[in-house]
Image (tube, rainbow, N blue to C red):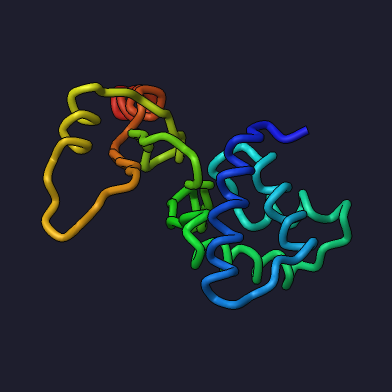
Length: 156
């Protein structure tokens, strides 16, 4: 069972529209990859998606091709995150609400936070020649746990 049927349906609709516009055919394997990624915790890595697709015997190349197609269709977005090493993470954007994330640059911990003031400002701001659809705001810094470790290390 999909964690979010609504997210899957929105992603599928966006993908099908993109495929029609680019004269491509839907594929059962791509749909299986889309189903698998909708079941993963967001954000996820390509390795996590590959592992999720192993049971269906979907090749690594097919998973990467599907990821690239989903990025082109704006079903997913990708970003680089430093967590000990530089890694690309993907996140389903189809049907997801606007969000603000705080990210610790030391341990990579991500926390979703809310701010009505910021959300309202971004939504109501008039962008010239631009129609905003959704947003994710990333705020980078140091979490309380890492800050405490640093203070303890320096204090000893």
